[in-house]
Amino acid sequence: MILIAYILLGFTGMEIVSYCVHRWLFHGVLWRIHESHHTPDHGLFEMNDIFSFVFAGISMWLIIVGADTMFTSPAFGIGAGIALYGLLYFIIHDLFTHKRFMPFKSDNWFMKLVRRAHQRHHQDAGKKGHEPYGLFLFPYDKYPEKKRNKSG
Ligand SMILES: [Zn+2]
Ligand SMILES: [Zn+2]
Image (cartoon, rainbow, N blue to C red):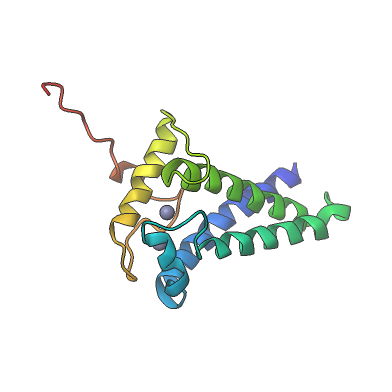
């Protein structure tokens, strides 16, 4: 059971870390790298992907370090939680929202809500940036689905 708690800790911790890093570093001193994600017309990869590899590396390192003590040390669970976060981030942010690599469509309300909120972040392409900086944690009532005009 404690393993599940560590996985949840890794997952939520990663959302909080990525919010802070995105808001104060990516849209700050690391803007030169993150800018590649805010400018259209990049190739298959963008400079910003470096950050994904850094987080994946930390996650793998924690999993390997924790592997032989997986039920006694928090490292394995936290590493697995970060990996789970990265996987969902990749599916919802990269594939679904930005249509990279293998884009797919979905009518899932939560994925569409995350997409609407994240598109709001992308409306401000400048260094200063705009909320929401987190992918999953934002005020859910702030990004309602646009009602279609039935008379049209
Ligand atoms: Zn994005
Ligand atoms: Zn950004």
